[in-house]
Amino acid sequence: MSKIKKKRRIKKQLIFNLISIFIIGLFGTYYLGRLIYYKKESEKSFTYSDILAEQVVERIEKYDVNPTLVKKNDIYRYINDANNNYVEFMGYTWRIVKINSDKTITLITEDPIMSLAYGDVTEYSKSQINMWLNPIEEEKYTGIFYDMIKSNDKYLTNTKACLDSFNSVENIGCYETNTDYKISLLSIKDYAEAGGANSYLNNGSYYWTTNKNKNNEFWYISEDGKTGISETDVEYGIRPVITLTAGTKTLGGTGTSDDPYVIEEHKPETLADVYIGEYIILNDSLWRVV
Image (tube, rainbow, N blue to C red; front, side, top):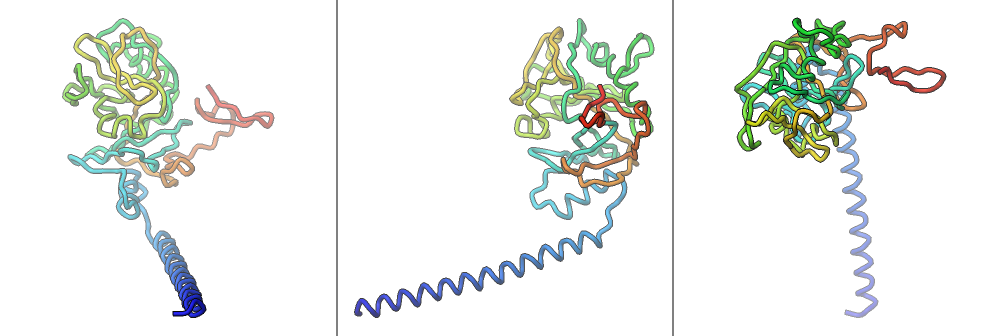
């Protein structure tokens, strides 16, 4: 074959390949456009439940091809790098940890709201942390955090705190529990079930958990997501954990950080109506109420 014929053949092959790629791209664009169109139309025609626990599951089952919400023993848990479990409530951003078998919903604040030490105690329920979170009848000046959120008490039910003692995170459970209070902290078990350091619960901060070891030292999560043991006089972050009632409704949102689930209509008319932790604009500057 002469060089001229060979060049002509290569040129024809090249033109054929370019035309083929163009046609494939054209068809691909068309069908991708149709897929997006029908997905949007399907979204419009699908009506989600207004019950938050039900809607969360519906969204996962309908659209999440790589679910970060998994079901085990009748409990739905968010795991790994979940990014669709945000809730805006009472001036704070929360993350859904799990939907319990009774349709109640366990939430944890996205960030620590302050730092505290456990104090000179051997039991979580008698700690400075629990007394700051919850009102204790026989103790004065307790329930500081509860006082900040009690206007929304109708949304809350008691939270199960896991108080098991163990010396190794290889042997954890939730057998010793307390359900006397509305507010608690995260347990090592819930942290591990979510994926530990590889999960959304690893937010780059130190914070306490409810568990201790046999020497009455308490477990915490470090800034790199590792679990550790500390004496009770050390101050670490507090990430409150609450439980929403089974019938809690959502007013909107899709659970993302930019569009979190909203479960209350809160439109403050005066500064006295603003929640602790909520943002306000004053003199063209953004401020946060502390």
